[in-house]
Amino acid sequence: MILTPMISYAQISGVVFQDIPSDSSTLNMYGVKDTNEKGIAGVKVTAYPDGISTTTDSNGYWELNTTGDTRVEFSSWPSYLEESSSSNNNSSVRFVPNGTSINFALYDPTEYVRSLSTNLITTLQTNGLNINNDNSVIKIVPPSSSTQDNSVGNIIDVAKAKEVGSVWGIAYDKSNKILYTSAMLRRHVSVGAKGLGAIYKVDLRDLNNPTVSHFTTIPDVGNDQMLLYPDRNLSSDFMEPSHDPVFNEVGRIGLGDIDIDEKKQKLFITNIKNNSLVEVDISNPSSQTSYPIGNPFSTCTDVKSWGIKVHQDKVYVGSVCTNNVTSGAAVSVLESNSITLLHT
Image 1 (cartoon, helix red, strand yellow):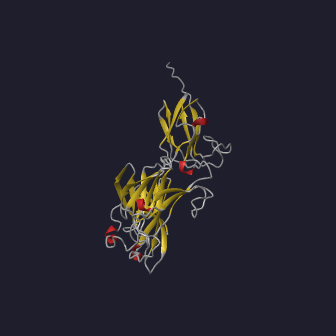
Image 2 (cartoon, helix red, strand yellow; image 1 turned 180 degrees about the vertical axis):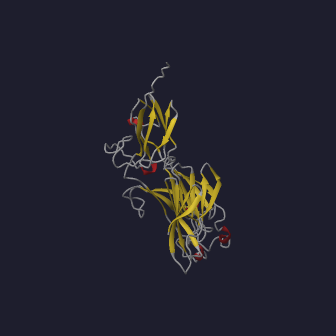
Image 3 (cartoon, helix red, strand yellow; image 1 turned 30 degrees about the horizontal axis):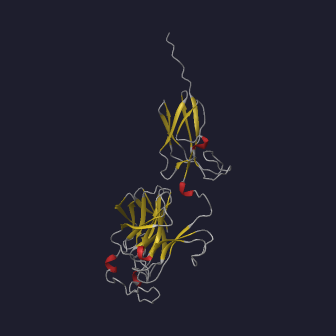
């Protein structure tokens, strides 16, 4: 008679969920699942030494049948999420006794605000030729401040008109305290020295001495038309009236909005002229990829795109129909290097 040992199987299980960040709150402790926190689907869970794995379901739930004590590893979660604090033994690698249930918490850093008293960064317009203009066009406004009076609330001047010219879009890397801003064609205001497709970088690590530099240039945004008006009849005295010849080009050429991805690795900018979304590698800004946004309207012959919002690995783009026959608005989304219409 041959006797074979009986193998005892036990189930380990748990939930992978999105932690709601909190600051010294017992209602939402890091690493502890609360009733208002949703599960995350598609996360891979592997148990060793058996080497078996599964993925979480739509509610974030998973289970495995294992033999003996087990090392559990979580992987392949969405890139915009990070591991929550380990203060409650929350880790992507866990050693667990046979038959134990364990949860794993992830959180979205962009949803975390340490204080409601948060500074506002904004762009402003100052008329005229900006070559020698020392007026600030980017400011940091602390809470309860007024942009009308720099003496109120210690408003900080970040960049001068002569450094960046006319700008509008802002993308902020809060981890490295770097601000990116894009040139914009406005009436009665000149663009910066680097032209209509310029992206500028502002180092805010020392607020007493912000450093402004040219980051990169987006090509084919309409500079050929701007060359017809090298100074656009703008006065160096920004209080003087102007007769700007680019009236009909505003909103039709140049750059629109700008945003940064959650990992602070890519910038996304709308090219208004050719109605495209441009992706820029922050580590190598000359590496640029352009995605045609297309025409989401059946009866529109002139589509322009402007607004951008990056959220959870997707890039949302707002478009409008600008011709005189049909009006409308649409939202498209860039996902997996492909732009599709989301809503009109």
